[in-house]
Image (tube, rainbow, N blue to C red; front, side, top):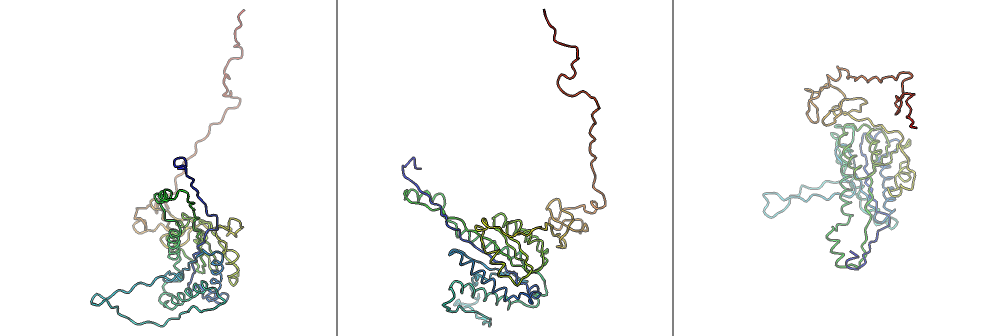
Length: 376
């Protein structure tokens, strides 16, 4: 272009620190927090997480945060507050009025005009506390009796969807044709290429076995790995194989502290640096990672199992209904594989060389007395 129109085109690269998006998945399983009530109550943990969020927002003006609750019966946003669905008018109404069913009294927190508190911090804190109170008030005994675990797979899906939307909003929307038109309109202008959004996910987990969500969690891990989104794990209680694999596959930080009451110290020291700052730091590692998988029939972690040759589903037992795969419906001969031992192909014996055999060098078979004739 410069050789054609003899105009100079400048492109400037934005070398500032990229904005960081932190998506926090908070495990709000009441069963698990009841066991930690003596050392770390849920209210204290939530207060420590709010301090950690304020520190993340104070690290950069363009930093943002999202908080997702992974509850027993659902996964929902604590921040930002989801937009309420617009009420629909009744089909028989002629003037478009909406029937009011009344309001229920719920615990709400208002933003107080405190001169000693930064206004954006107060807005985030108020929204999280209000949505958390609504979540706990809407939890019924039937929800707690249905399952003792938490829906971590749905929370990871919400976090990845929010990060994907924020990345699209942050990236420039100009296409190649738009850039060409801008270059023609103002050839001397300096165009700036901005850095992309640095995103990461932090899971604060207290639940134990998550083998019943093996498929959705692994799908989320593969999606985060493809988008290069690290998943950090702070395991306050229990032990699970899937979260270790999530941290190892995505290049995140896995930490299981021995004293959960020091939650704020672990958050500030190990999980506050973003992916850009971690390149210059020595981050803690999980050590050994358990790479065992969970079976698709009973959702149990197995050491040795049976794998479907079509869809790669894992089963812990050969007793399948009609010998059909539970995932794709293919016929599997698992019982025959257990009764018949695997066939071993015998190895071919190598021929031994004879002692004193002639070497395979060129001219080795030439007679000793056959010299080149000499002519007088």
